[in-house]
Length: 102
Picture 1 (cartoon, rainbow, N blue to C red):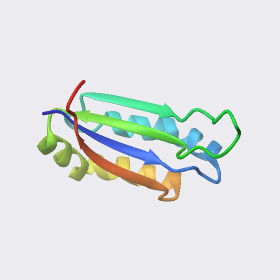
Picture 2 (cartoon, helix red, strand yellow):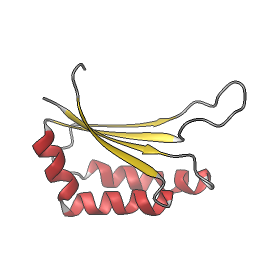
Picture 3 (cartoon, rainbow, N blue to C red):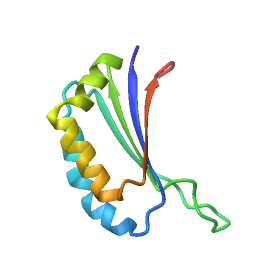
């Protein structure tokens, strides 16, 4: 079954700095072995002006758990997660998800 690694990026103090780093982060994600699909999404602002629950998500799709696990443990995975942590100051939540419907 397909596996998605979802990185939820919390609201950042300097979101413009992350946006500047984003092309490099995405290049590093594309280098992950076994990556089938990559999505980057920005959370829409709330109409009432209150803070959003998060800033952005990165979704990495793999054929299965073993492939996702191997990719994140690879040198390319280290480079990707290092870039994400540096660009966000560690303000992330990472999830391994079993994709049930696609």
